[in-house]
Amino acid sequence: MPDYIVRNINLAPSGRLKIDWVRAHMPVLNAIREEFERDKPFDGLRVALSIHLEAKTAYLAEVVQAGGAKVAITGSNPLSTQDDVAAALAAAGLNVYAWYDATGQEYKEHLLHVLDTRPQIVIDDGGDLVNLLHTERKDQAAEVIGGCEETTTGVRRLEALDREGKLLFPMLAVNNAFCKFLFDNRYGTGESAWSGIMRTTNLVVAGKVVVVLGYGWCGKGIAMRAKGLGARVIVCEVDPVRAIEACMDGYQVMNSEQAASQGDVFVTVTGCRDVLRQSHFNKMKDGAILANAGHFDVEINKPELTGLAVERRLARQNVEQYTLKDGRKIYLLAEGRLVNLAAGDGHPAEIMDMSFAIQALSARYIKESAGKMSKKLYRVPEEIDQRVAYLKLKSLGIEIDHLTGEQSKYMNDWQE
Image (cartoon, rainbow, N blue to C red; front, side, top):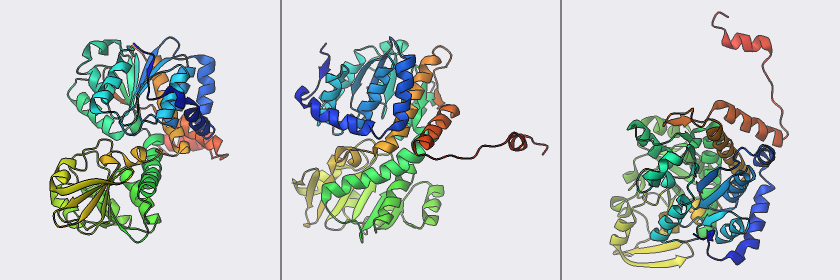
């Protein structure tokens, strides 16, 4: 088996510049790397990652490698891999199997190459590695001591496995850690999604009607940033509590069929499929822009959009123009894949510093807890969340108060 499968190993110097840049802006992960280099918590272990392969995730892989692990990595989305970053990791001695714009078959082959390294810990983003370890590569599951899942979509897949009692090894829901979803999902997605949309379209946001479909933590961030950019924001939800929350946050709330005729820009961020479909496309304005910030490219029903179109062409890099029978044009960004990564650089480095610190420490926890955990889905231990938060505050030069002994007693004594 080759040590790596990348598009062009000669791109490594460009990728190394990107990795070095984010490393300089990830102080929490740098502190953890120092510990890992000293303690070698993964010494002799094989660790596999399927994660959006760009500079920040590359640095996470290098931090895990610094802890003594033999690391194999691939992407978690065919359009989010950056070929120069993949080449840089390969040149640094990691097993890398990924390239940009992989076909469906290539993407799967890359995942299987990673599993060919017989990993003992998996770090997943979206659940593709775990899925294979529960289907085609089920025979390898006994070798896996545990793993960590990065994103909402992957956690949902794990929750389904856990409910049915079918998980074959313990998993930590990294996405559900406070220092992940409160910052990564809200501020990271909010900023990076709009960065991807704006750089791809080169159009103004101010004055437009933006429809955000889904008001979870990612949707909250996207709506907040759209409002800050001067857009009028409509939120569509299926959860009545979140709908009330969006209303009280100052957004107009309505169902998606009503919103379809009003929006200039639509952003799906639900984790569900067919959120925008034929009935919506039929009502949209000429020039409507569709973008997805959910993990898989099923939120916007591309087959139905294609079926309505009499012409389909590339209008601009990462912008497909669908011309409908009545002459209206609808624009789909980044093939309906994650717009912040397929058409951008993903979340800012300072945000991913916390998320990947949670990942690194969670992987170490899995190693230290080997044989002590059941085949279940677990929350990230509170002490990991607290540790990352304190490291982040330290990097920002911020000091906070601490409870005195009497205060702590008061807060924990029911008789007071």
